[in-house]
Image (cartoon, rainbow, N blue to C red; front, side, top):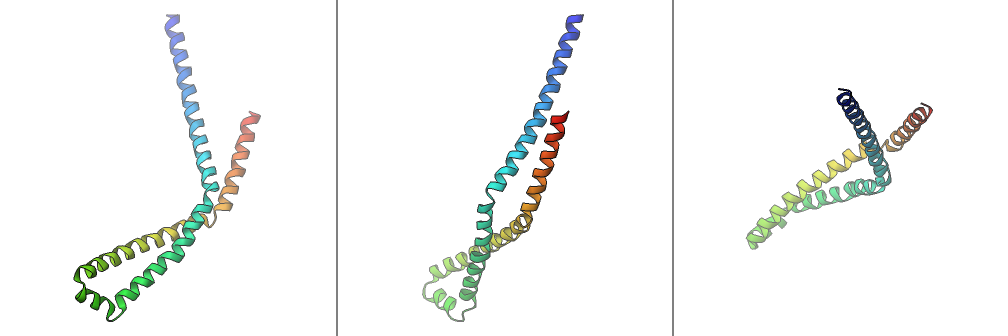
Length: 135
């Protein structure tokens, strides 16, 4: 009987320990993710700048192709296969440039206050670490 209760107690203790380790692992995982994002924010800034430069440039170039009075018309009638490919290419370019511009705008809104958010995160993390050390 006492053997059964000690087995249950040890199993309960192991389960509690595993749950605590899972929580610690999740917290460490989140901490590593935030630190990694802080390290790679230069890459995100480059992506944002490229989306603000390349996407509008692509959209302007496709507008020239579409709005030019005779360019697309001449290509379609002289080289019909090339014209169809050009129309397909223009449509895909407009869609991809629009998506790229939207992604740049959404990432810019996220990273505009990143330094403040990251500093606040580090402050809260250090406070929690200090509280856990005291206990």
